[in-house]
Length: 621
Image 1 (cartoon, rainbow, N blue to C red):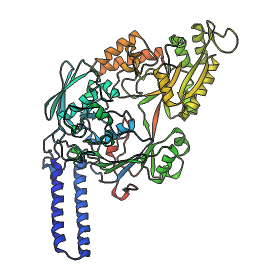
Image 2 (cartoon, rainbow, N blue to C red):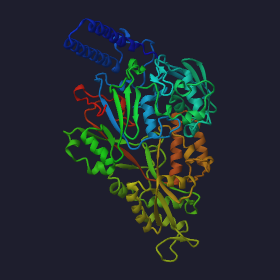
Image 3 (spheres, rainbow, N blue to C red):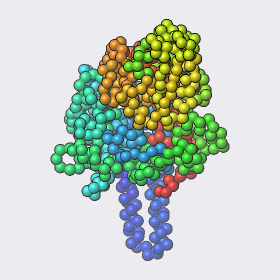
Image 4 (cartoon, rainbow, N blue to C red):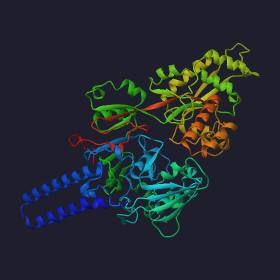
């Protein structure tokens, strides 16, 4: 996509600069020269703001012609309707990260923080509609089609999309106005699929992606080995990778060099709305708005010009930063939300706004199916009847969670709202356990069977203050039915090692989900025993396997929803997890930000803006 619409403000700016140079040559008075420089600066600033206001919120006739058509007469960008045409340009956004990262290369660094940075700096072919989340809308792609056999996507790329300008950190070569082409998407896929590149997590998602065929600079095909429901999401969320940064040498691509290029992996070069500016390890990462962003001509240019992430590890320190307005937004803990938001800044006349946003995650206790204790579904369901969810919701989570009954995002179409979590019923649990052969034969208060007591251990991470409250409640309630629950806290790395090796009875964890659902990785029996398998509880059910494989090739959303509900019912009846809760993201943002709207997947930072009179500078910049 060309940024020719940007040339008009550039030419005007250059004309003013020429006038300034001529003026500087004839004016001898220092005071007069300073006066003219200040006037020029204000004129340029006013002109830039007028152009920004026109182009950021929608098509401007002065820049695009009376019809409002773009230079390429291209289709509009998706979600442009959610950008405020009245937005005032400028200002900052300061968020927080809780830990630093090893490098900035998302392909080799499976760090959620780095993924967030790339979402700021790198666009994808399409994105989900902000309200109708089951539908994809154009971003870098003008259009796409899918072949009748569901194997080949044909992509038409917008013209004139530019890579961010940068100077190679090793060679010193300057790269400016480099256009993104179809080859850059092929390079992205080829690098991930290269076995020498440390991109195993991403490579697993592209396992069935056969190849990318480049037709010309702005058209290419993405070919899949077999029909697959996630092929649409994976294809349309592909992004380009800058060959001129990562393969800036003669000869074939070197995966080892890509992994170990510590200098280039300290920066990000993208084509999105924000450009990587600087990274001060242990302190701050800074992004500046990319003024040649193709979204300017499509009405999706963000208003905020600087985005900063400061490293602030402790939740209470972040809360204090919100109060002092050195931090603009953050998520609170449950304790903070309940106990620390009664102060004036959070009240009606205060400057902080609280938002309770849905989280695409659920917590659970996974029951290792290799343990004989959990191989009887009646036992697993009985244990779920011993969870007093109402008490836990109130006493542990202050009613800031929702109980879940199955493996899908509670607000998605895949989730069947008719299926409710098992009710707390100690007597029913006792009967189910007795019917399964568990009785207290020696009178010690603990059920036993074939001479073995019903005793098991649940492991959890020692950093979870929530689990330190939740698990003792479970221990108490399990004991009412004669089940002895032991609790063991572990360092996160140790817990993961135990889980990977299946050296546990039960584990308290959570899953974060996507909108599209493929249950294969978590629930299909083929994944049992695989390195890094998410099916670490060894769930094995032939009917579940059959439904999963049917889901994976069902492209009709209504029919697939029926299959999801059928699978949800099966998992609920089997209860291989004790399903617990879906929490909320307890979000706080400064009220000076406008157009902060809650959408099904949360808030959308790129649509925020701040009135001129309330814009603040970034401390230290």
